[in-house]
Length: 276
Image (cartoon, rainbow, N blue to C red; front, side, top):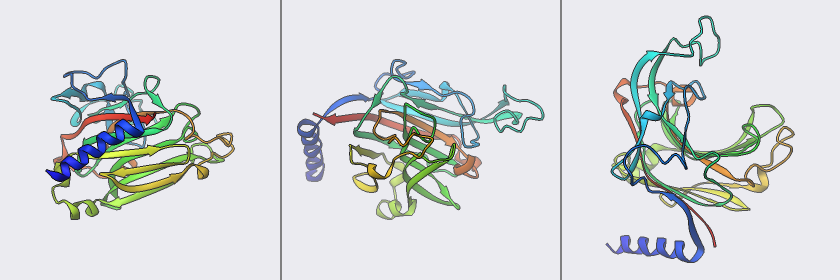
């Protein structure tokens, strides 16, 4: 009880003295997400992933945003016989999921981002919390991965990354930290069944990415200037929007276990603080 009280007091002190809460979504209203804040991605999105994104797989219930990946086979409406594009060469959709973003609706320059969530860790699951800059094409717009979970060479990891532009189209420079999932299980064997807090502290000097107050990665903005395609600009000195998604398989999600379905990614809240 003493530790809980101390943590609560520290959180109150932080919020009241150093920062102010500028936006949050607590997902208290059951049903669809607030359309004034959230957008839905649709179809096959990126990275050769298996899932077809659709709004139906994201819903609010009992104070949580739930994103589900479901085994759901049906014809691919984009299919073109003989196509070599991965989105249109697939005859069927094998599974569905959701990806939601705040693009054009809630965008922030600097601050403390806190997301409390419980993630799926089954084989093939690729949940993420990330941000993208609003100007320029990827990667010159800048990407911050507050959280990714997937398997590297068959071994599950939790990742904290940032990417920015180079002199070559669609080629990023990465600052990545991948922590074996075993590191967290050794401290708490019940880790996967519990909620955890991912945090980003972002200011003019650095991006610091935390999991339950453990610093996973520190990225200094003096090192994150784009190459020539991104006009030498720093993509982390512009507003970013938030993305929450559950991908399946693909380039990094890897082989999928049938037993992993349905995958359930639960977000308790999203909060953004900025300095007073």
